[in-house]
Image (cartoon, rainbow over all chains, first blue to last red; front, top):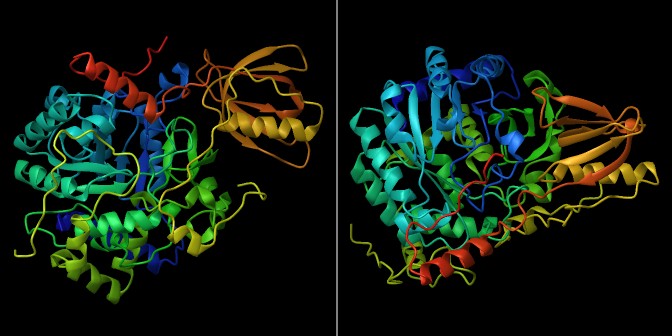
Length: 371
Length: 141
């Protein structure tokens, strides 16, 4: 597992403290969206479709700090929009690092190389770079040729400067698991700390609503991707969450595990689903009808969701909440998950549907279970 | 979540191959008839999901350009409200359902930005020999 020991210790003690205090619901990661503006226009994005006056708005550093202090989560993820377009993003990040929060700054890295000198490497700061697979897949997914090259250039520069970097990949219908595995090889060679991955979620406000994987297809895809791992691959995620994606574990959603705050307020019920806003974190936690959300609720808006912001908190709470979970997490950290059936999945034809990308050469890698 | 939404069983959810996604109505330019309280509540629920601004005419005659991002329905229209941002104001504002006389949906900001549109444009430009093909964000006019 690629997550540093100090970060794991912080999260573990935080979980145990909350458990001992009898807290039923507590946040693990604050999803802090300081703005929705972006320098990409991805068709699958539900964030950049707002009217211009909304895209021009942004949280002030003071609003960000107040939200972080009110929430109390040990980790803060800064998505968007593109956070590097925020004129005070350095001040925001420095303020969070000073608070000893583990910060994941999510960026498409189009501006990363240019902005890097303004940031200081720290164990508390990770650049989580949006990279949806290999060059062609990524460029097609973000609707911008050349995007992959710029992002990888930024990643290399960040690694060289001593920053923590985790490529962050989202996969949609039509993803070829062979290409994803080749992508892991490519990014590990660059020297990133570990990969973060997730199936796509059908954001209500996204223009495109036809490429989102259902749970059965998610499990099949991730079993093919994550079984028979190479020793060189590292993942900056809970091993139990990865097992959940592969279909080896069942979890219910923990929507309060990753609360989201943006210019509208505290988003109900989670980062992905917009069902209204609360003025304060306390109001969010106390007045949201949590039973109406998550896979167990039957809510159709939660039907395809297996996304990390809802289910990784479930996995983390399992891992640090029981001896069985902890042992499972340890085992998962070192297992390569050999699975001959999964190997066969790599050689099966792609699911019927639209291909994600027009790959020039459709030749598929056939891996052998000989490692 | 409204009560009439059809819920899935756990088995149905686990067997999903593709997620159905959200069916977006074409609401651009729509002026809903607000004859009853339910008409208004339904229209404002659609406004909450809408990806663009609306023009709200109040019973006082005042007109407001608004992006509605939040709503709460109480027992009466007076107890129900929407929360919105107006283009030329920094702060969030709240408006009672009881004050609203007319709604007009503006430009749908996501219309015409489907995946298929991107693939079509990409293939056309590629065939024409263009380089560095991409979609770019709309100008923030």
